[in-house]
Image 1 (cartoon, rainbow, N blue to C red):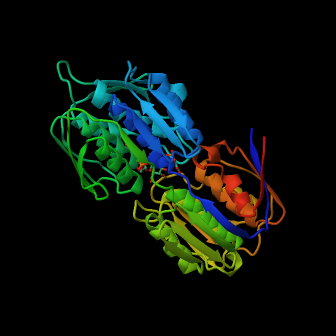
Image 2: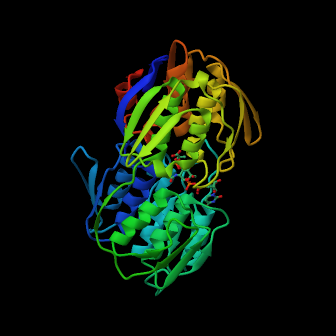
Image 3: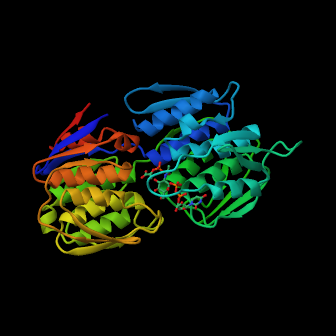
Amino acid sequence: MDQLRIRGGSRLHGEITVSGAKNAALPELCAALLTDQPVMLRNVPRLRDVATMRKLLENMGVQTQAHGERGGLTLHAAGPIEPLAPYDLVKTMRASVLVLGPLLARFGQAKVSLPGGCAIGSRPVDQHIKGLQAMGADIVVEHGYMVARLPQGQRRLKGARITTDMITVTGTENLLMAATLAEGETILENAAQEPEVTDLAEMLIKMGANIEGHGSSRIRIQGVERLDGCDHAVVSDRIEAGTFLCAVAATGGEAVLRHARGDHLDAVIDKLRDAGVAVEVRGDAVRVASPGAAQLKAQSFRTTEYPGFPTDMQAQFMALNCVAQGASSVTETIFENRFMHVQELQRLGAKIHIDGRVALVEGVPRLSGATVMATDLRASASLVIAGLVAEGETVVDRIYHLDRGYDQMEVKLRALGADIERLS
Ligand SMILES: CC(=O)N[C@H]1[C@@H](OP(=O)(O)OP(=O)(O)OC[C@H]2O[C@@H](n3ccc(=O)[nH]c3=O)[C@H](O)[C@@H]2O)O[C@H](CO)[C@@H](O)[C@@H]1O
Ligand SMILES: C=C(OP(=O)(O)O)C(=O)O
């Protein structure tokens, strides 16, 4: 099992290029199921989750072909498609639930394993099911599978007005994709406004979908009979960019992130500036300069839906707070169990006290390297950041979590001067 070995203490300097967003690429791969025409995606990140999704789609009969170093991937769902997502392929990746909406919309049936339980919370998919039922699907959950079909004699889903109980990112994406091929109009109220939802909507529009209001909390979709192929570049990964900003902030140094979308990271950048980090957004580049964590002021924050502070940045910013000056509180409002990194940060010497949804952090002048275990994707990233500032050697175990969502993180960090290597 791969590990990362980090020798802390190097300041980070240089330039890296941010990859395409995992959370946009995954629904966009699934959108290829909506058409019998080839879909060309560019800027697809090299991630374990992308490989898993590709395997899942190929298993159904979708032809895929990667081309070029730039993350080109063509998907073609023309032949016979078996609308089945088996447990073995779904269990490691929650986003596989995103095949449900497209399969049902185009083929009128789907059998999709319930996604596996995840370290960060129970993560039910009731809102996906409720929304598709409102569009006329019959869905039962049996033997661990969602078995969905259209009623006898019905060829297409029917447009509906759907208000989800809470804001759900993949729920919005599933219903959005389903609605593009439904009969009539669908209105999604309480829709997620994350940039990845917007990017998916823009791709669907290129395919011929009729969508308005994406990027707001009400999305209106007029269903069409069929969709075409398209050529689409996956939006830049704001969470990868935010992770590198926190890493440079913590170690000190100066770096430029190319192909970044600073405008998708306002809440994080504001907190970094309040802490004392210089962040400059210029076109598609973000420049960051920091004196190092010891001279920064810890920042309190609470995670909320976009455009608020992203839950996917909580662990990384907490790592920064651990070594900044003063006390801070970090409140997690999206997932009920997303403090798994705390115990491991404590192993490195961090002072953190958890009280329900709030973690109280007291900055310490130094962390000391140790062997720590990654428990989920962003927890792993926070341990890497902590390892970069800790004295001595830190070994991060179980980095398959990190590989789910970061495109060659250690290679990029090395390019910035970090002393980090992968042990296989
Ligand atoms: C592949 C992908 O894009 N993953 C992102 C997506 O996950 P994901 O789409 O799974 O997260 P959601 O936005 O759906 O979850 C938000 C909250 O709603 C709850 N909920 C959600 C759906 C549902 O049917 N019932 C229900 O109770 C969840 O348990 C959670 O407490 O958004 C999260 C919140 O920004 C991010 O952390 C993930 O990185
Ligand atoms: C929680 C995350 O991803 P997923 O929804 O794919 O588990 C994440 O990207 O931080």
